[in-house]
Image 1 (cartoon, one colour):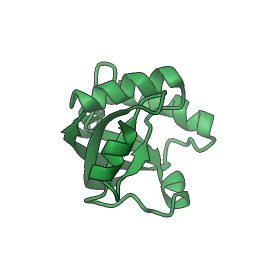
Image 2 (cartoon, rainbow, N blue to C red; image 1 turned 120 degrees about the vertical axis):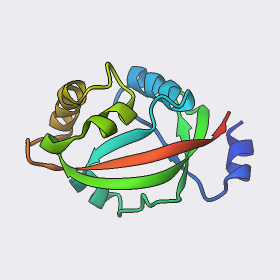
Image 3 (cartoon, rainbow, N blue to C red; image 1 turned 30 degrees about the horizontal axis):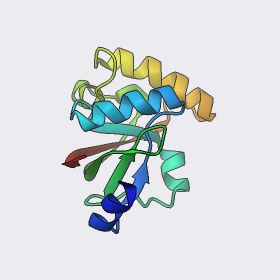
Image 4 (tube, helix red, strand yellow; image 1 turned 120 degrees about the horizontal axis):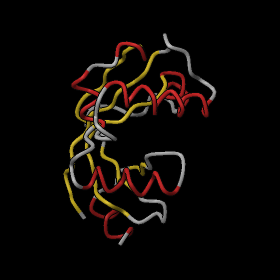
Length: 134
């Protein structure tokens, strides 16, 4: 399956959402169902990946077993402070009750595990859309 998807989207890189196998599976499913249409990372981790996430890039979304769930295209990038997350962007993240409060609670824990959390940290929010539901 992966070879077929890679042949169809040769420039596409791979994306896994979440930092545990359980979360990777849940988030891959939310993306493939088009409930989750955005994701976030710290600006520092965005810079470390070479700022290679650009509008128009395509990504094969993988679950914890490296099975492709879908293919997405980056549609927009936003640079905001953690404390300034908007209702609209939190909703697009598609997790929990989709509120800003839930987003801040869960992402504070994630960014603390990453070692980058501060209330005034900069966050990159990446909006995407499914272009191929596998």
